[in-house]
Image (cartoon, rainbow, N blue to C red):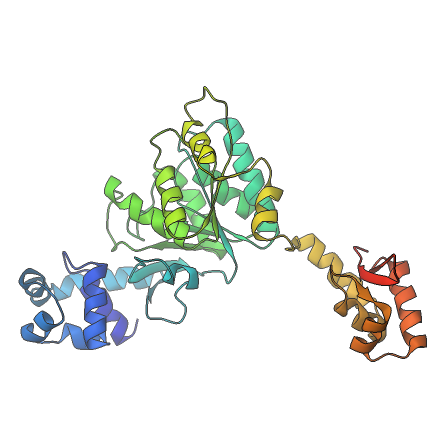
Length: 362
């Protein structure tokens, strides 16, 4: 942890000094080390109240050292809004966290959030697992909140597929909540990520979870709500998704089931209906291959000679006339004819009426 991060940590641990104050300090000083060392008059000019200034002046240095050592022992990284590796989508929301505590490694992949009831039905948990497994197999990172029920099933689905998942906590990064998820928590840390915007030691209070939910949706291109009662906290995540311009999805349920009243209402209000993983893939990633499909493609490409590979890379879902292909690839008519026939026989090209070709599925 460098000097700038130590200064940021010190400010973040100051009682009452939240994200708004951190943004004010950075806007004024452009450096948290300078802000921490600033005179009271400068802090007032930066927009801080007298009470906050007094709190900064009274920071308990030994306590800061203890927390810093604790974070270092847990291999926690600090990522601020002004760092290059801050998640790009999260940066776009209107109230992004000023500071994230990170354990593990953020994957450089598209993310999709899956949330729902803590008291989900067996069918809901199974469907959550299946959807998360399929999305993870398509190189999509599953984001959820490590809560009981649907959240846990979403994380497990991604892990069982050997994919990526991010858990966003409503408590300090050094706490495991709920405690029965200790093994899942440990599994997540092996190759995935756990993040929190709350200072270390923060308990999982009810008021923290709406803030956690805005991060879950903020990280993601879309949000799926699996099961939710009429006043479920998962619906708050859905509200954030709409506010942030994310795609909102919901799974329908029995009309009389209390676990489906919230999701059914979302569907009536315009959420996209999901009954299987392909519904999400077609809406957000229509051309995203699964890992097996990508492996098959790689193996297919390795078998092609230079001319056939050149043609295959030019082909797509839009038909190309033979003369267009020849111009793009710079091949003679004889070379073009031979390579197109080779590709067609291998299944890598498909001939359409009018002497046009599209890419095949081999």
